[in-house]
Amino acid sequence: MYDYMLGGTDNFAVDRQAIDRLSELVPEAVPQARVNRAFLQRAVRYAAAAGVRQFVDLGSGLPTQGNVHEVAPQARVVYVDRDPVVAAHARRLLDDAGEAVFVQADLLDADEVLARAARFLDLDEPVAVLLVSILHFLPDDANPQAMVARWREALAPGSHLVLTHAASVAQSRSGGGGKVIHRGSSRRGGTRSPAEIRTFFGDFSLVPPGLVQAVDWRPDRPKLVSTRPLPGYLMGGVGIKD
Ligand SMILES: C[S@@+](CC[C@H](N)C(=O)[O-])C[C@H]1O[C@@H](n2cnc3c(N)ncnc32)[C@H](O)[C@@H]1O
Image (cartoon, rainbow, N blue to C red; front, side, top):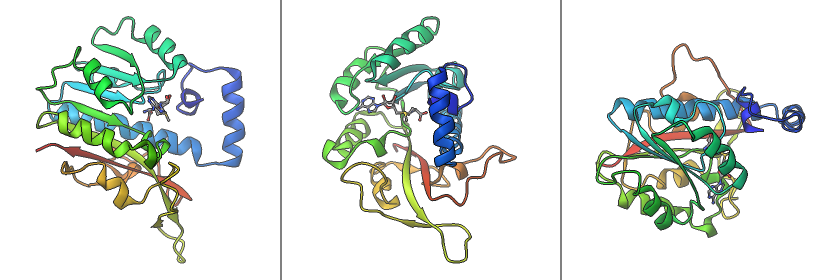
């Protein structure tokens, strides 16, 4: 379904029907999926331009469009997902991609994923860890904060943390822009407030413009997609370990 939302060809009639129906009910779903994926690609290009040659894509969701190893072909990439269907597709997709591997694991088990990533990557060198459109699926009682903290601690200086996270937005009375609200649903997963999302970066330094709407994070020019104002939106940011 996600592949179809992104304009890919790795999907089935049942996926297309489901998303066409979803689009009628939630018209922002497809634009937001594309905003999310375009953010991931800009952030990967940013990290690669900063000299990062190793990536870990947690909750990678392959197959999809513009994968990390395609955006940063010089890099070594570890994709992580627990879904067996994703695993089967990923192995097929990555057969010829010598510098990319797939690890089927629960990303909440940071020690296990770190150990398996370390077989393929040099963790004494900078790594960009991607948590793109995944943290809002993880409720507080699954302790995603501890998982991200484990990565922050294990990574070498110069490493990047790349994330998007769903937040909530309410229209201002004037109708312009949008005011961020917290729906208080973080304990069940779902949206978190910008302040809560910021805590995932810990003491990493946020790259300008900071944690912003993903569509506004270092947009390619001209900006092709504008999703504002939306009833719900996606924040994105990149932090660096000093
Ligand atoms: C919305 S997709 C995001 C795909 C990609 N990161 C992107 O933003 O384009 C979320 C993916 O996370 C995976 N996932 C969810 N919970 C997970 C967990 N605890 N461990 C590993 N993968 C998980 C799902 O199987 C799914 O493929």
